[in-house]
Image (cartoon, rainbow, N blue to C red):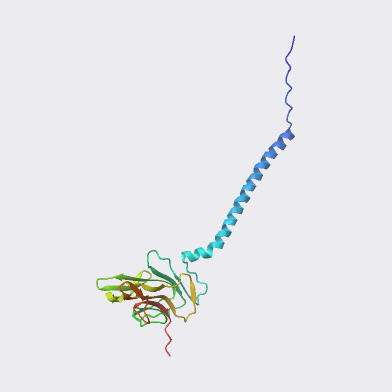
Length: 219
């Protein structure tokens, strides 16, 4: 009578072998976790370094005014949200400064007869210059912290829509000595030379000149 072979029993796993197997699995899991943590830390550190390297250019784009020396004047032109928007942020080291606005005899260099002027406070100041049409012609306004503080009304002939040259300054922040004049905007209206052509005027002309100055002390 034939008998079927009995399969051999699997070798028993001793307690030491099970311990080594469990330790090996735990070790692999721990090593995987450590690699993941290290990789995340490395990526974060690299991202931080890249952002720090880009910070100066990002500040320039955002037009953020930084005051490195409170004894100096600091100024930057803010990004325009629409065509020909003119806004600035300044830091003034004292309350001795005044803002001056001129609309006639504006030359390529130098100053012009003052139409309106305004004393400015110490510290951070936000300024805006706007020009708009009115029923009588034109109106030029200056705003300090969103409040109108200077207004000049001009006739229609002041700006005949022939174009202009110049504009607002300081797309990048600049610093000035306390006694320096700071020209925020210089714009000169062009003159018509033919039915189809205009050019920049020779010598003083109508336009807009906005500047900051520290008046001379009385003797």
